[in-house]
Image 1 (cartoon, helix red, strand yellow):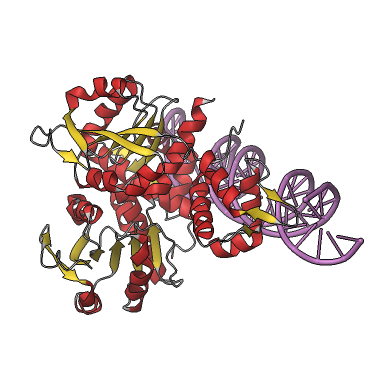
Image 2: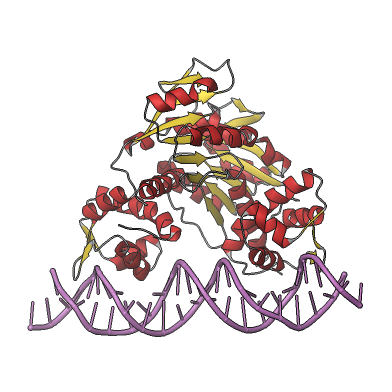
Length: 210
Length: 210
DNA sequence: TAGATTGTTAATCGATTAACAATC
DNA sequence: TAGATTGTTAATCGATTAACAATC
């Protein structure tokens, strides 16, 4: 159905979702693209174009029904489905992600955690058992895992990604500072924190001179 | 000097920096835009355009000297300077960031940490003292702090950002899931983890149907 | 010198914004 | 019905890619 939507649009969807959720919580029933544009600091034109990639959610002369639009965007993002996830690496970052209660609310459920450090094996993070890396393949197969989160250092990440792909994982949320080489049928979403910090550094340095 | 470089270019700089660092570590002396393009999965044309935003780093018939280019991009990104940072929030995410040894190597130094939970005050994260929020303004002024990292929940983030701006902070690395409202002279770099995860979710859902 | 490869201009492509007819 | 606001087409803007003259 909705093939070849640009990543620029996809990147904006969660932000729409957030603002619509806030409006919904405030009890706002309907909103025009113009008013939403003001709140979100965007253009009404872009908002209408973005939404129309997925079908007509609005009504002429009325605007958009907040609750309906919110729920539709949620579905587009796949938030109406359950995602069974595993965590590779149980360091601070892994802990932090496992503790994000909001993830679970949105259908992202951590089913297991793996760590190469034998001393941590057997511990629990928020009810999730830490297992040895050897158990990875079996666990993925037995528990219908469809997403993996890589929070280990870059040195081990490429190898782990290969194993994940080999046992059928199709989505990887990668926090290791490498570009993972996977096939076209595997989706990788990178969070490169140090690159984000360098970007801040650049913009800070260069704004001072303006 | 180098005004109005597009954010698309800036976003790519840290990635160039990473690949050039790896080449340097491997002992590679020079590289052409063509070869770099292959390694990085980009186009030679884009690479040359990007570099030329900042001046001519290459030489016709030769290519680019890896070590020189690496060091120049580092300077452009401000990695040759020290950044004095504070951490707002000492949860798992704060811990994880404070423990990134590579940040310190690149000149990003955590000087202090603040938490509203009185039970944590007085503890240390990697040698950094956790202080009560009341001490924020004084500490910033006395220690030449120029960057702040917000790792507290969204509910408190807007208020804290205001206080940071009021005491002169010009760069905020924001992990709270809100858009901070700050003046034009303050740089905010957002890391919205849940939006990143939703994007992964979208792409995963929609790739299956292809 | 000849070959290689940059720096840079021109062409293309894609994304954003503007405009307006359709319609609630 | 008249006013409001969408859905959508057309215009603009910006970013990427291609081409090539300059030059090491």
